Amino acid sequence: MAEREPTEQEWAEARKLLAASDRPITTFRLGGQRPADTRLASWWGGNFVAPVPEDAPGMLPLFQICVADLPPAQRGAFRAEYLLFWIAPEPDKGALIEGRDFIIRELAAPETIPPTDGQSSDEGRAFALFQMHPESGTTQRPAWEDFAHRVPDAVAWSHENDWFFDHPNDPGDEDRPLLIGGWPQWIQGAQTPEGSDFVLQISSTGKGMFMYGDGGNLYLWRRPGGWELLGDFY
Image (tube, rainbow, N blue to C red; front, side, top):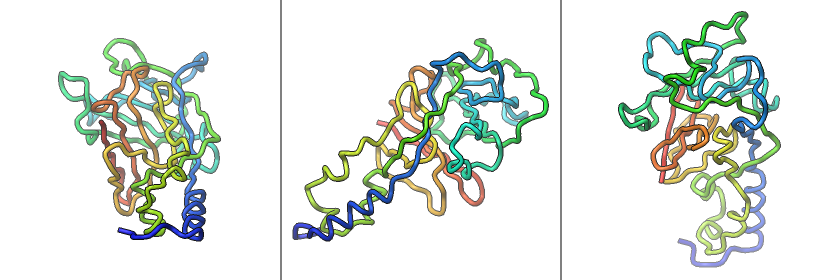
């Protein structure tokens, strides 16, 4: 533990590092506009451009991202024109199995769209159905757990913390449960997988009828060998 107050140079270094850590973020807002008359858009709760994979019965469609909805600088995290995400419910509870059971497909825009198999109907659908509208231009800073090791020890152990926490950091809410880019906003503490790239955060939303634990978040990472989904809650 540091036994002295930080010097002005150390404070300046810490603030410079914090400003440089800002990452662009795009949030997806549920509804609020008349839905496009097409499934070739970003959707929450179904209406996907492809049906659930045949080898994964019982998986539920949570969101579809049309990569063209993102700013050009954020499209590099994706390897196709669409990302489709299905997740499994916990039997009889409507909750999730620790956020581990999921399927992702990255697809090119289809020339023809197959039948939905009920994914866009009210019958049998677990999550509310909304078109998602992108909202960009916001930046996000890391949680303290992902940043403290980068600053001088005297700053990390200082009781003065307004310099770090006075920046509004998590724009996710009931209307905006999907956050692309930025940093994971941990609830119980950082769990960053080694050698991975953070892609997006999924937040619990009453509007979207999705709840992970007690109002928690899921965090999606891309690893060299595939995807990893982590989660935490209150």
